[in-house]
Length: 401
Image (cartoon, rainbow, N blue to C red; front, side, top):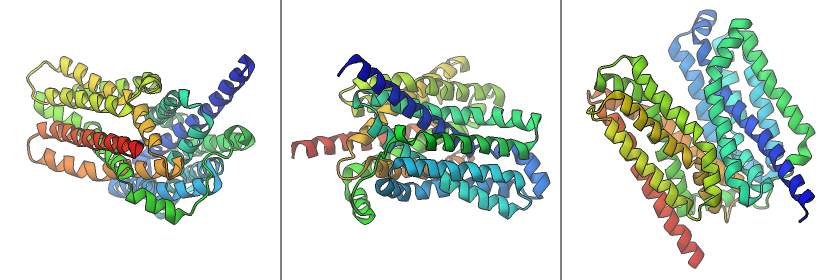
């Protein structure tokens, strides 16, 4: 292969990674479009905060439930068509929120946005796995993951700024319009994305292979357990630290900020590490174990809180460091089913952990023992390690068979 050909290949990969990762950023940003405007929405539509919260829940449930079916569509039509179509639907639904006058109009658009949002994991991973050289796939997956993280981080300040300059209705219209423009750009660059993920086979056969494969079901369980471990930190660490260390909530929030910021910063180095690791499952297990230990140590209230911030930040960095290794492990399991279908299925487990975890952590917090928040998070991490280690065993067993 000539140097020119190699340069062209890398340039093409960079275009694919950039387009797909920006779409992933928007998909995560769209998840958090409404919360900054809850106060105005409550006044304009005459609804309660509970009702507004249910619109976000509806978005999440629809997204999680449809990821596997969208994987089947990727398998039939290819990732490019599904991704562009889903991005367009998601963006239009968000933009149309600007014109709602009733609660049920808002709920309907959030459900529709959830349908569009469900395409990203199966379509994105199918495209990246097909269009990026395996030697650079870990780094491509890490950029993709970073895009999603940046979407979560950027959503509140961007929406608040837009609402300040315009108003909440024009803000949703503008941010929805950005996604429509991106969908049109991707349509114009269809040749770069290719027909990634399109395979032969019936959806029923793929579904049977998904649910009867021990290795795939273990990956599904890993996603659910790691998600449950993470949501304990994201949703309840601030109130728990406030009780344990008798500090203001603003001070306690600094630990969560460190956790999320360092997790995001570690994602890109983790992609480089995944490309060079011969055993991504072992790397993941070691990082999850160390992260769980640091979280438990932080729960006892025996050390200065400034040190707790450092420990929690390190725990977050260890989690972010193995994002790409996790995704590479999933790719290794895509032997009998398409990559897009497999990612759509296992990431549904992530949604399950997000749905079920908060209720359990809330119950633990109500018990009067805030330390249990961190012990439960570490416990979920330990169970996640067990599923990944067992999955590694099944992988070696299949290779030797």
